[in-house]
Every structure is written in structure tokens, then in C-alpha cells.
Length: 189
Image (cartoon, helix red, strand yellow):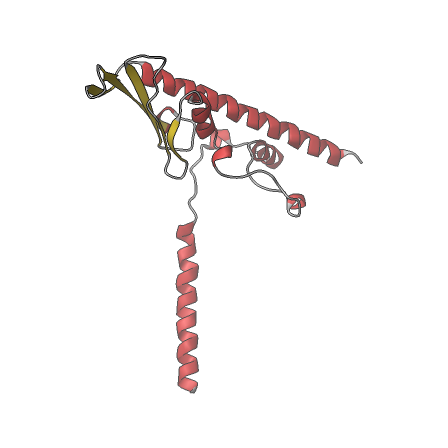
């Protein structure tokens, strides 16, 4: 019996060592440029809270209505807003793809389909890939589908990126105003 207890303790100790050692790999640290990080602690705190990072201990008991999913991703929201005139076939946030259904104006023989793939959550030129397909139907059975290789996908991507930048800047401005308002109330003594 004594041997069984010692063996169990050794196994638990070994398991806990592996568990603690593996924690270091679980946290991914993002490299930053030191020129963009303020030296002063108060300035760093101000910058982080303005960008919506971090938390304050005074906010722990409060309920929040902010959610960290598709509604907080500016690139996703800008894409949906830009494509709001088209019917969507698939919009999968976790899969990072938006596919529209075939769209045709009036009685035209041509219709288009747009596919947007998200390669990053950051607002960057290489953060999304826009593909446009054109279907030309001379008759119901005689249709040709081809990928559009002109400037239209690039223009659509640029419009989405511009809209996402505006959404992000608006969010940052709201956070700065909220933080200034909170700091203004705390500084009154």
C-alpha cells in the first residue's frame, strides 16, 4: 500500500512538471517595434486602453455588452457592408469566407459571384483575397463561367479596406473618449 501511494505521488509530480513546462509554449508573444511603444507607463496604459486592450480591476464586476466575434472585426463588418446589395450564399466567420450568390441586374445575360477569403484579422492589403466570377448565359443551358481578371477585384478590396479603416478609427475614437471620461471622473478630488 505504501508503495502505491509513493508511486502515485511520483506520477502526479511528473505530470505537474510536464504541465507547468508546457505552459510556456501556450502563450504566443507578438513582436513589437520599440519605437511605437511609449516609454512612460501612463502613456502605455493610455495607448492600450485607447486601442481596447487590457482591463481595469474596477470593471471586473460590471457586465459588458461587447463581444469578441464577428461584430468586433472591422474587416468582416466592412466586407458585409460593402456586399449588402448582393444575396449571400455563405458567410462563415470561423472559416473566414464570404460567398455571394449569383447576382444579376434586371434582365441581363451576365451575372456575377464574389468570394472573399480572410487571410488575417488585421486590416492589411494581404489580409483578404477577393475573387469575382462572371457567368454569361446565351440561353438557359449555354452558360460560361470565368474568373474576372481586371481591376474590379482590386477596387472592391480597396473599398473594403477603406471602410474597415474608418470603422477601426471610429472604434478607437470611442475608446479614447470613454477613457478620458472615466479618467476625468477619477481625477476630481
